[in-house]
Image (cartoon, rainbow, N blue to C red; front, side, top):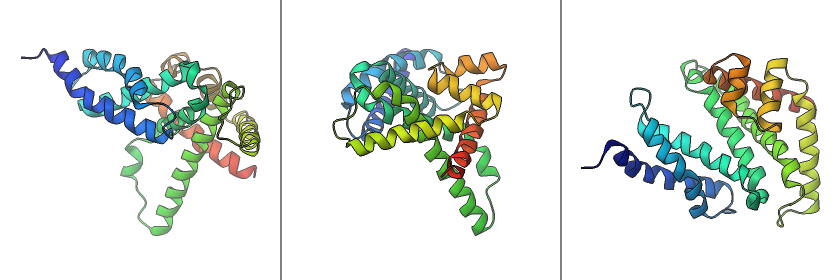
Length: 222
């Protein structure tokens, strides 16, 4: 019979492979799936050790932790700098969705017009999150542009990065501090939450609030 941790690792391997394949597809296959699996495997060992069944299902817990481990690994690996901007954009979008959570579903709008407005805001938020992720990675990847990108695309990304950084400076103080420290200074989300004197879950909601406001600022600047 397997030990509990060994059993969880065995179960988690399917989650690891599925998560790695999904990220690889969204990155346009710029990083081999096998390399993404290698990035997530050490996290799976830690996940099996720290999993608390009273808090969530193992599959959901493992998928979230593995996803962040892979995104963090991509950011640290200089050999994948050409994919870093895409990975950063995907991570920002995922964190935005995480901060919104299930609370929004409880207050789902009843009318078609309200639903359309809510959907528009959600899409704008994801767009703003991805623009922020791209802007944060822009300085790191500028020296190694993707060979598939045209000069016009590179110039467009540079303009977007400038617009996003300008909009971030317009955010309220705590939202701005959270966004700048995490995206531009590369600080860990949990460490920023601790410094701000709030829980990580509250920091996640604050992050989503900042992203929604950032989307409004970017739309107003057009």
